[in-house]
Length: 127
Image (tube, rainbow, N blue to C red; front, top):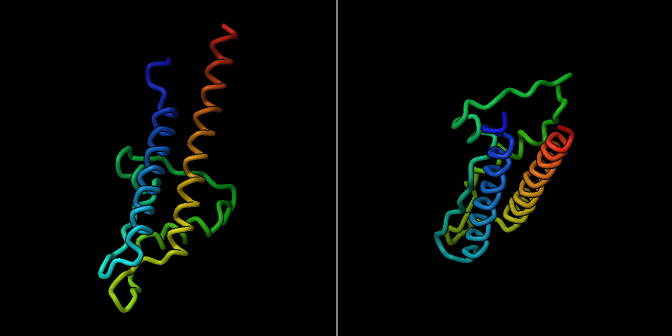
């Protein structure tokens, strides 16, 4: 029963993805004045999750249940076509938003981990 706890693996993967996203964002900010530097981006976690594990389909009760904001921000992650005259494509505003998103993603992973650990503890203590 407890040999394969996918929720912990998923939370760990989400947290490590957030760390990679934060590192790439930091690298972009550090090179924001480097001539010719092209900003880098990390694929959204849901795309990577779908590719590696087959993923799962979220069920909604109505259209727009999860909102269009998440889909739009995921589509903008890789769009770094505008650049400065020196060829640098880093936009500090975008990197700030990416950093906040990485922090939220990490907090979400920790919340899932803590909640799952709490449920596991309460299940084991009642036996």
